[in-house]
Image (cartoon, rainbow, N blue to C red; front, side, top):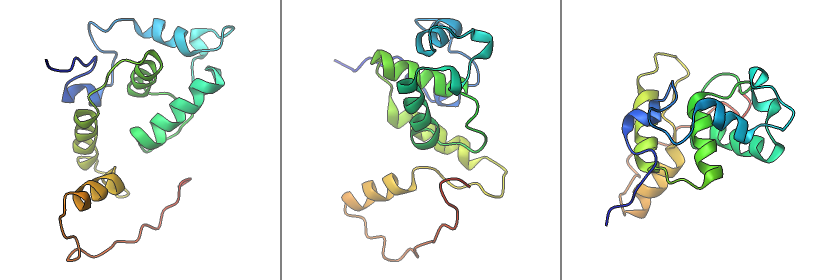
Length: 144
């Protein structure tokens, strides 16, 4: 029997709007993760429960890293945080592939392909010799 995933297509990793036919609306998902006394009009990282804020930060900086301000929570990040909190299955390989494809099309000069460390680890674990490829030093830091 095939696994059943809530979000299971490449287009989902490129979310800029709330997914159609999702189990809750955008406002219901926001309500689920915000502090009790927060107005949805003020929704953002500073208004969500502390524990959820840590999860949102990890989503935005590690699982689905992106350039830009962390003062906002993207729709894509909100979908992932909601799924993680509700323990809904996400097809991570497809999400990561879609995110890598989208990142490769970014015209910015500081663009780099995400997940380099994990991809390298997987390739090495599969026995692929990478010694012919030069190691590239990254000059940016976490806060750049």
